[in-house]
Image: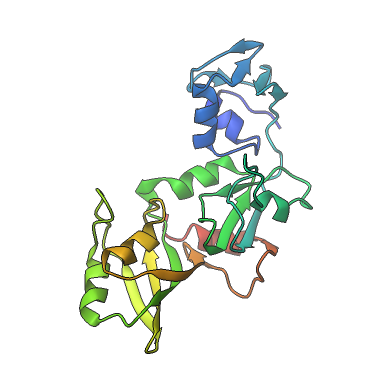
Length: 240
């Protein structure tokens, strides 16, 4: 595949090694060499005649872009490696003959839909705030939530120096001891959904992401993968 005049960060992302944001980190930290010389120039123009290395390993852009939906179980870190040797999503995609990485993150104690791909450009698009990609979750919370508190949640709450944007939220089930709330947000602050419920006086007991964009998790079993087709990708990019 001939690639000419790619920015350095985009060239690295196109290899399937990582997202463009992570490529920026590699460049900033001095982990990237071009033709044997360390560079920290994100916008350096690269062609197929150049030799690019990250941490000493040559970078070659992937020919085929691959996309998978993964139902991440609780207890797995959304990373391809972990310094504390905890289980990671890399273990769940080890049988795929390509270098995949996760788009965005789910907390260790959150389950549900993660996109695994080697397409750094798609990862960048989905993660960029301007696209406001919707993410929908089912949250099991302690106690009974009132209509007033649900409205407060929907209007936006302060989660510690950041006020969340208005969101969609509805009660799907309620008992005397717990409530299940379907909530859709487009931001991606660390542990945002949990913090939002904390802000109105509730603790999240279980949290599961059930869709990204218009792409649903569906009946995909925990720990399993499903290859995405053209229709799936259109659903995924539905509100971009």
